[in-house]
Length: 154
Image 1: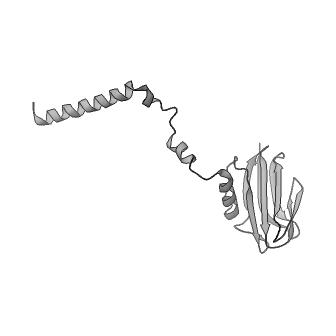
Image 2: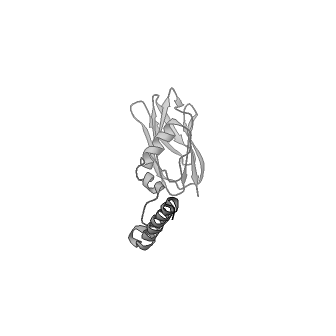
Image 3: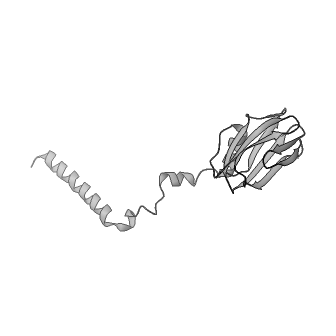
């Protein structure tokens, strides 16, 4: 037998032994309880509440339906920082919106007809269950500046 044939035979035997070990060892072969790479990554990510806050404050991207707040909106010089915040939520989930402003104003959530005063020293805070479906504007009432859009889906 040539040297190359012996090497090939040894490699084949090692592969067969490895496969047999994996098939005959039930404790290590149970993948249902092992976390996937996605699950392992999920356990090390920031909590959804913090993600929602930074996403909504800095951009107009829409968080997932499971992100329920708190959502932070910052108003500078009478305008929302990063543009009009847009977020979406499933009906029945809690809504938690905090508005900080360098100007004193009344903040109004249309549709729900909720109002809160905001000033440089006192943020406005809206906490309520999302019971009404639709698209609702949050605005600085006196200056009529829209600062956010809340979508409540079924």
